[in-house]
Image (cartoon, rainbow, N blue to C red; front, top):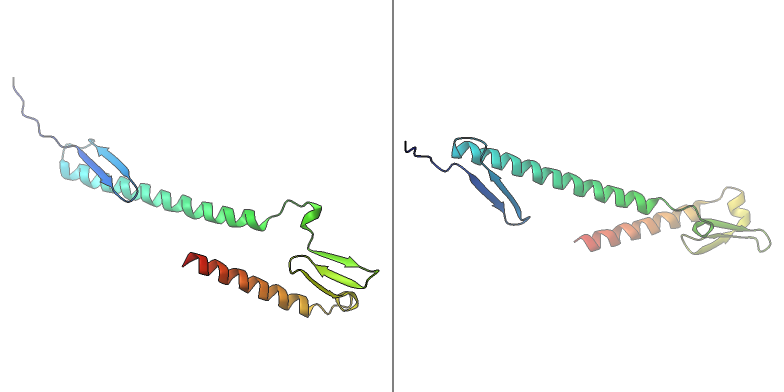
Length: 125
């Protein structure tokens, strides 16, 4: 017996990512094409989710330090009556800091944070 068979396989390639799919599960070429597109969408979505998770993880790693002594934030020097903030690279009067007058430190921290965010935006554009 001679049986005529129709090729129903679908080979799908997305050029930007280079993802290749070859689907032969269904007997209809249209159903195979729909299935291949669904699989491609799922794979692209998974890649996007992994990329976002990697970005969040790298941000978290940047925020968390090792806890070593070299990562200190402030040094209080009583002998010289000085408080040094190592993130800002600035010295402040120790008496003012100890009495709770930390507004200058807060303002400089805010300014530094804004500068870092602007740099981040400048690199992204």
